[in-house]
Image (cartoon, rainbow, N blue to C red; front, side):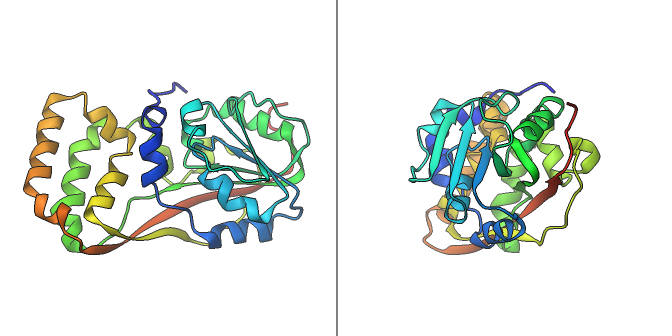
Length: 256
């Protein structure tokens, strides 16, 4: 699978400040399902949001990413070790981890190379969990006046990889080699002004790519101008972003 331009590294600071935090209940569920709570590999950690969320439940977390820029914005914790390496060729010990997690990044990985790497570093019967965002849900008013027009402008600029997560991380599509287990529904829930929502939407890879297209820039500038009063209002809106979860037991080698 080819890798599109790394827009996340280009805007690492904005990503760190504008992305909502994952729900604590999800990390509690993951820990409850994981039999042993010694070591976690947080693969493609970005700015360490998932590493920070899982760290209270485990003795040690190793969080890796290919982006030095993203890791520069990661929040340090005593039991988290950050390091630069690829998901497909991690410089990690074999049979070392009770849990492997991938937050909002599985759809960017090379599955044929990633699953064997997971099998090498995971202990027998370790747990694997990946998750990604679905589309946000908010009030009909905000959806019609701002969210839907924004999404329409950037729609042509989404990479094909994003559709993998929108289709729910299907077993066949990600070539998941382990027995799946059911996961409860989880969602990000925030209380935001429209200005905060805009900062989040500007972290979308499609938005970054759209800024290279003059027609899209003109359309976005027009939308921002027409919604200036809404964006400057202190009014807050409830927003919910459901998460797709893929979970399974790492019970057999994958392609080894």
